[in-house]
Image (cartoon, rainbow, N blue to C red; front, top):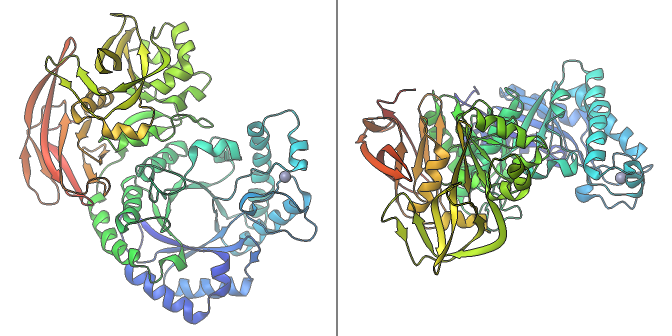
Length: 584
Ligand SMILES: [Zn+2]
């Protein structure tokens, strides 16, 4: 794809201030460093950010140098602005984002877009293209509407009439890219509209920087670097340009590298290493150089990413990032803003309850024979509708259980006692109207953690989410396997049981396994499970095969036959496997 790697293009970004200050000598030495380690295919060169507008001659100097080196150069804009003469002052603008109702600021934005389009045939907007302005003018313009509705209309107008329209009037060939941030769950609060901006912009891009989840501001699961690329690819098919990560708050080199691995595993076309001056003399970049070659090789020839279809409608939130945590329990997840009605099994978290028609969609889906897994968050948000539709009789009492004991109901000896307490919501259900596959309790009480009922030709599973969803990682492995079996379903899918491990699955049967560098950093045993009759698991790099073994499980009144194979994974090491004898 790029000049240096087969499966992705390596990209960096030169912000306006850096662009303004680059001398020809500095440009040459910086370039030599970046090229040496990560191999540079493309640069986004920014003309405006905050109080900085880069002069045409300076942009041309940088572009000429890079193009002579064979580097592709596109334009970039960050929609922040310092106070200037003519603009209304005294507004509390976060990060100096624009007030999009101020006539002077609107005029200025149009000029910025026109200037960039006069210089470049492709322009990306960095992810400050949001609005949270609550100035008196914006309050007045909002009127009786809520902020979400007001900002939806406002940013549609700004996108069409101040950014894309004026740019295309100056340069009809210009391709306009809107980069969305890594905070999908909050887009609608701030005027980001991937559900409708696809009709205005030519392409999109997505933030995949997850940094150090426990300590960084945003507490984003590592799996986001994979699943947000998949979400955007499903939202704008074929038009997601790339994934964007940075060096900030990555308090280990592995944390930095994992962002690139997962972005690449999701098949992002461009890997954006933000940004130019952060890369220079950074030891992270030396390690990245080594690893890019390995990930290019490991993803070479693998099919299209696939996983458990997870419905994430636009402009919705709730149980945020939960599907990503499931992705870190060895379950491949495929998030999509389109209700996955033709799939064998689907996952709905509380976010799915943001679709006002979700109950009727779910009812039609299950009735026809689909298996739907819903979370306690979805049950909380949509419970009334679910019960009215006759899809479940279960409800949440609002009380919590401090679970120290797990009971796998189909397994006559499936009890795990005396564990560190984890708080789960209490589910009450009608005995024999639905059936619990996994109980969690303390003393002589327990509540279902995985509950099954039927409707029409299909089934509904309710899975319980701990009060702190991160405690999912602390549920004992055998109990987590009940969640995994329910989510993985009866089909061709494979799941992996093991600590801190993700399994990335592709439609040609390829699988990539990654053991995160977190928690206890020692090698771990990971068991791969499939319901297909397979003979062996083959490591596609070493060629080594591991014989598969048949196991028969009792899951309440059904017998489940699985084929399993065990591998040992080292933290921070990428490996890839295929089943031998699998039918696709
Ligand atoms: Zn305002």
